[in-house]
Amino acid sequence: MSSSALCRCVFMKLFEKSSGSLKTHRVLSNSFVRHFRNRPTAGIGRTYGLTGVESSRHLKRKKEVKNALLQENISCYDTLKFKITGYDIVLVESFTKIVHHLLQQLNYKIDELYAEPTFEQHIKNMKTSLTANVDDLPTVYSLSYHTRVIKITDLPTHAKPVLIHMMMYFVPQSVTFEISPFVEADEEKRHKKRVALQKAMEELKMIQKA
Image (cartoon, rainbow, N blue to C red; front, side):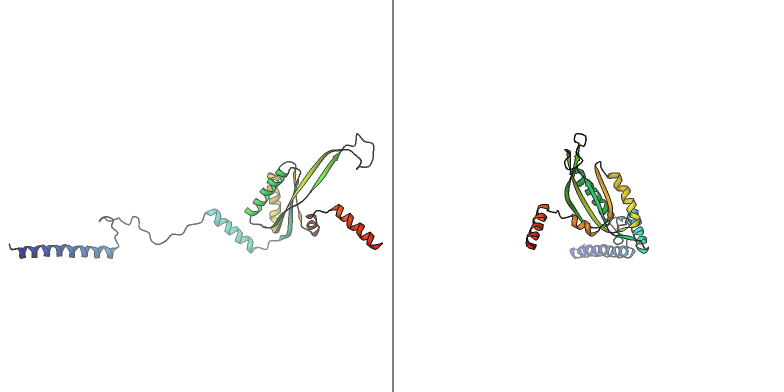
């Protein structure tokens, strides 16, 4: 066999192989068969679009309850104050932090958190003195009371007893708390009165009138 005939036979065989591979690729592409290293994968590892992350049952239930409450007509308080008082500032601050975190977790609207001026409470002994004047009695103990106030609005009426029950569980000893409506007099308590300055102003007014 001549060299030209041999080249022709080799070319024909290569052409047949290439045409056969093209046919197989067309068949595979039409049947949507995926291959990995020339082997069919049987659909393993195939993704049919993006899959969304499903929310948990707890979140679904929370959304359902929230939507149900929004549809109902629920009465709410206008403005309430959570007043926390105690002579140990560490316990007062820690309990205030717990209440503030609790209100944030329940998604209630917190307007303001502030501290009122510290006031002192004197404990006197009446046995060692015969005087009837309380100011003249000897002082045994002097305690400094610290106050923190959390002001919130639009608190549902049905949530108030639940909050009181939860706060009673966390309240430490020597700390008291009170929930009451916020009035204008509470705003004046935030500012400490200067007794000496008020007396000087009154004396100045008396001099000007004279």
